[in-house]
Length: 216
Image (cartoon, rainbow, N blue to C red):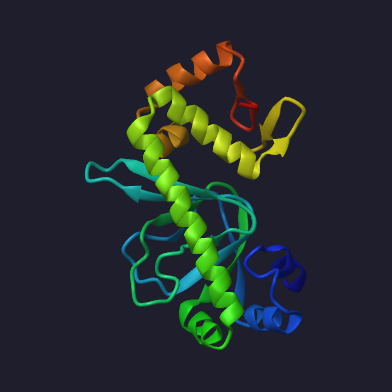
């Protein structure tokens, strides 16, 4: 666990002693594919650190549709809202594949933060980055057509999670047309049509287990 914490951007700047203190309040668990980690609206009693695997965070619209807010990978800490306790989970989290993760009790985390200014500052920096990302995504939703939204979403995933190649990025993840539709706020049929067009134009290669995106 110590070695893993040293690779996580949030905890890497801390001393070994400080990381040991954090490890002391973490509990390991595994999640099966499609297992729900928490539901939107439930009281936030724990936050999670993803060791390996993939988790989607989504909200449910009034008409029952799923709107994916984020797709999380190794080293991601979630959720960010509710991290200090006393508020509900802002969305539902579901494992997209078999995953390994750690849970941290929010009350014990709060006690640690009270005595560690370096960790508090690092948390604020990460929260600021998340806010900037949400602002960018909101701008995409409001100002771009659906083809641009889909291409920008795939490119963003590729840059942050993909394997860089000579002329693009390889994204070794299972992402269905419905998942992508839920991320950009459209129908599966629209995504299927646009993905087919992007394939014909040579911008992407897309199958059930891997995506290749040409560098923009």
